[in-house]
Length: 170
Image (cartoon, rainbow, N blue to C red; front, side):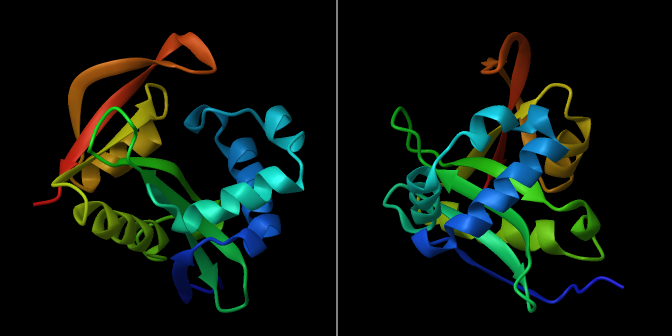
């Protein structure tokens, strides 16, 4: 039976090993969901991972981790406000496979926390999802995100598209 008792908190520089381990897991599990390859991530040194850990409390963004009572990192989500807009963007969404689904509640809890952070900055939040990532698209739709009709080239393969979705937070 899986442990579904978990807490959510911002990442810190001291979490760099856990940040690295979860990032490598997510890139292996769902490569099309992210703008980085596993091979590229494996080349990063300790200083890069420490910087990523600090994103949990940066001025323009946050990264949250879901952690079991035993200390296992089971999910993460981040958000930041891109320079060209005042609307926060949801990024880096991942929940380890054994903790996905409504019963565990990890995804919903992380999303609620990120949306709370974003609501302090804007009346909406956006995201980009790969056109072939139907599982993620369905999840976002279920949580109130809607397609805007805007698409963008996928950074790792510009012949593929990312769909923009938005959710009203007011």
